[in-house]
Structures are given as C-alpha cells and as structure tokens.
Amino acid sequence: MRGLWLVPILVAAGVLVLRWRRPDWYWVTFGVVFAVVRVLVRYRMVMDACGLTVPPPGWRLALARMLHRPAPEARSPRILRIRPTRTGLALRLRLRPGQDAFDFSASTDRLRHSFVLHNVTSREIRSGVVELRMTGYDLLKRVRMPVTRDLGPMRIPVALREDGQAHVRDYRQVPHALNVGATQSGKSVYQRNLIAGLARQNVALVGIDCKNGVELAPLARRFTALADSPAAAAELLAALVSYLAGVYELIRREQRISADTPDAEITADIWDLPVHLRPTPVVLIVDEVAELALFATREEERRRDQIVTDLARIAQLGRAAGLYLEICGQRFGSELGKSITMLRAQLTGRTAHRVNDEASANMAFGDISADAVLAAIQIPTDRPGTAVVGDSSGGWTRIRTPHLTLRQAVNLCNAQAFRTPVIDRLEPFRPVLPQPVLTGILRPKTTTATV
Image 1: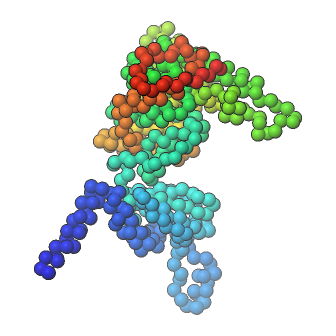
Image 2: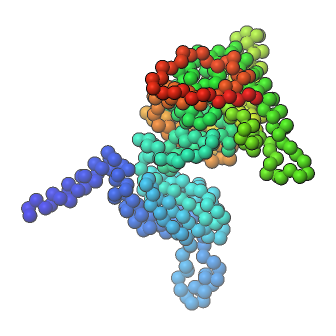
Image 3: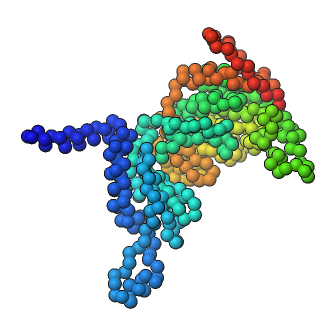
C-alpha cells in the first residue's frame, strides 16, 4: 500500500514518454480525448476572442430592454459536428448570418494557439458551412504516407500534407508545375518520388538534365528520351514541338463534328479519344532550368531563345495533347532573360522547398499569396523535404516528401522498365543502356506510340 503513490507518477511519466517518442500513439490513446474536451470547453471564449462571433439580433436586444434583463451575448457559429481523426480533429461549423469563410481562414493561427493544437486549416464545405481541420501533433516530423487506393491516371501521391492527407500531383487538373529550392532542400527527393509514382503508370517520361545527367541518367531505363546538355535539349524540345503538332492533327481528324454527333463524342484533347487511338501521355521533367537559360556567346544566346520559346509553346499547347511540364530549379526569375517570366506564368502548380532568399520565394508565390512566401522562407534547414505547395487559385499548404534513396528509385524504375513506350519522333533521344539481366522473368513487350 505504501507504494501506491508511485503509480500515478509512473503513468504520467509513461504518457510523457509516449508523447515524445510516438506522438501518433499518444494522440489515439490520450491526446484526442484531451483535445475534444479542451475545444468544447473553450469554444465560446475562443470564438469571441478571435472575433468570430456576431451581435445578437435587434429583436432580442429590444426584448431584453423591455423586460429589464441583461443584454444577450454575441452568438458563435453553431457546431454541426466534431469528429476525431487519426491525426487530429475535424470541426464542422454553421456560420451565422453576416459571417464569411475568409474570417476563419485568417484566424487559423489564433485558433491553433487558443486550442493548443499543432495546426489548424479552414476550408469551405458549402455555402454557410466551414470545416476546421486540426492536427494534434507535428505530422511532418516523421513522414508516414497514408495508404491510398488507385487514384486513376496521371494522379500521383508524392508527399504528406500538414493536415495528414496525401498531396496528390494531378496532371489533368494542374498540367504544368514549377519546383524551386536551394541545394540540399529536398528538391531532388521530391523529383524522385514523382518519377517513382509516374513509373508505375502508362506514361512516357522525357528528361532534360543539363548536369551531365547525374540526376536522371540512373533512372534512364524508364525514360523514353533523355538530354544531358543544352544542345541536346534544344533538339529534344524541337522534336517535342513536332510531336505536339502530330497529336493535334490526330485530335482534329477524330473530332467528327457533325449535326448527328452526340456532344459526349466531340473531343478537344486526347482523353476523350477512343482508347486505341489515344496517344501515350508524356511528362517532360527539366532538372535545372537555369542551365537552359544561361549563355556566354551569341550562338548560345540564339539557342537559349529557341529553348525558351519551345518550352513556352509546350506549356501553352501541351495540356490538350497530353504533354505535361515539371520544371525544377534553384531560381526562376527575370534575370534568366527575356520570355522566362512568360513561361513561369504558364506553370500553374508551384512548389517551393527551402530557399536562400525572399526573392526566390517571391518567384514562386509572389503572384499567389504573401502568406505562402512567408511560410517558404521560414522552412528550417534541418527539415529537408519540407516545402510549401500552392497553385494560381491562392490556396497553399505545407508538405514533406518521404525520403526515397537513389538506389530505391533506380530499382523501381528498372522494375517498371517494361512500361517505357516507344515514340517514333523521340527515338533518336532514347538513352542507350545495356539490357538488365533478368533471371526467371520474362520481359513484357513495350508499348508503342506512333504519333
């Protein structure tokens, strides 16, 4: 009996150790209960302190004066549902008349501190209903990707969002994207995860790596075409522009616009073509865009202008033809020369890893969100793979990419090499590599795109 006083001390110590070593287990066992109680108890006070309440209606004030009663309090949004999740809470609110969903988006940081949670994000479910998604611990400290089912063609889960959901790179929704980041920021690991996800799909990968191919050459068995110098890149981009013209001729020929053609059979892109006629989608990955834009001689300047022009043409015309751009670099500003900002304007998706200066963050998010710029320059050096991702709609969030070694990416691309399509116009740029030794495994035939 004399040792019973040690039991609560040992339990409290165990809870603290669990919170430190396995925050996910702590949240499921203890944290979610504490958080629900804290949110419900503090709710009215927090809403009032954050300015998320509305005055009572006039008739209630008049009635209180007539009856000589205290004036009614301001009204908070009504809680529709509070739902615990694996990583936090989902709080759904019904807005009062006169409230705006933007008010909740602007108050997320104050809500985070008031409810003592790690992060709070807000999104509008429908008119008059807002959902606050709260995370109970730092999900990006140890990245564990959630299990995702098959998301369909051209949709690749590449990172973990700070709200616990998978960040999906959807090429059909956001066809072209920019990925910037300083050295050792995790930009290359993000690129590897993207290639690894694309390697599992029936898609043609085309790479431009002007660092003599050190980043993309190890993955070359899964690439349909690869250029490792600015001169080869110029020729490859010219071939891609020619390929674009061929795809558009195919789409125009198969539109079959006539009075008796159903609307559902009229198409303006490859995805509504019959499967047997649909060209293979192509993803062009540029590893370091600055190497394509720098020049020292007049001849290199002419080549640079042609490269930027071809990239801009691909960005403008590629979506309908199933040709998508993924451009990576440390900087992407006007100092790279004329027309470069026109190309940047075509890149809807933006991902910024840790950058060395505010100007680099402004290149990615200056025309999207000032808050995203601030978040990008605050990424610590000891969190490689952490990035801020957004698009032209103004929305943004933090993500972190799971670590994928080069060996793991090489093994995956080699295992999926049978999916590498042959495109006639890009055949001169196909990387020449020795055939892998496969013991006891039949190598399937490659698919062929003849556009």
